Picture 1 (cartoon, rainbow, N blue to C red):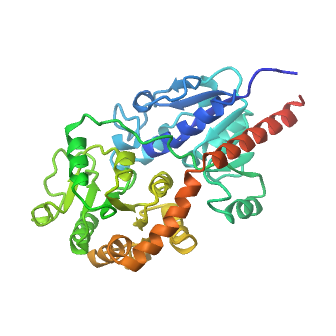
Picture 2: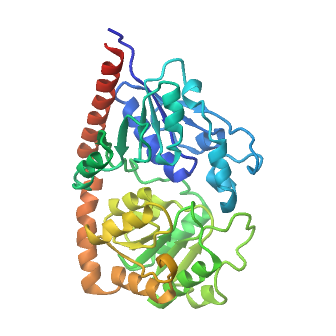
Picture 3: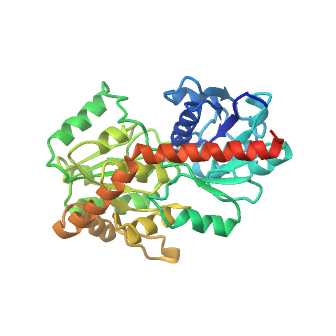
Length: 393
């Protein structure tokens, strides 16, 4: 019998919010004796903290393709209308570059096209979202305690094994940037706010707001009357903050609100006692981070599964409230909708109490490390079982 450990290659999408949970998964697999290779671009790998020294990091520069700027290695390096060029450039030889023998390729759902490439190379594939028929196994970043209905439903729909791998919450509050002047300024400002009063606003890096959306969000925060800390992403190529916010907005909200356009230590902010709610786009990582601290969610989904996440979290779990939408396909929102949702989360006593109670219960699930470790153990058992069946030993 071959005594060598399973070799698993983890291949996430090129956005930081996808890299972090993939790295958490890689570390947990490696801690159980698997050989794990983590594949990404050189700059992405350089940005990562490496909590598990047994993970092998494989740097693969993107090839040159039409429409991709020189030096682009992540979603933040390209204008939004050119992001499709990253799909063309995504490397097809990740498995070969990671070593001689690969037992499994674990792919981000954003890279579902690569499952067919893996099949051509006779490398079995796990997709972390169910988008293709060529994967042998579907892994979901969840657990039965978080979504009791979803796992059996997905298995019935797709006709193949669906394995929850746990929520993969970050292991601890990120202390990076403690010595940075802006971080100290934010911490000092939060220290002066009443407990559970501040709305932290962060909408990710994948889908920037239009100028109209920024205006309505800003005026909605102003109209809500609630203290807020807004991590605002500049449009690609923007060199200064001019024109990002409505005229006079910062003066009118001075003392009650803070806008930060650079890097923000999100976990550190969410962990602060002054934060009472999280206005989020409902990306999976952001949802898990917000619920980890028991924060009600003010939900403003922007694309893809974010709308499904928001509907589930509002309707089935009662941990947040969505900003009202109208217009074609329900895409438009206005300041009144933003203000109403924020007030429900941190101002209105009855609604915020109910939301906080539900969010606190979900926070207990996120913090249940034993639950997530059991999920990883079951996932590894699935990998080993399939590999034994396929090879005959």
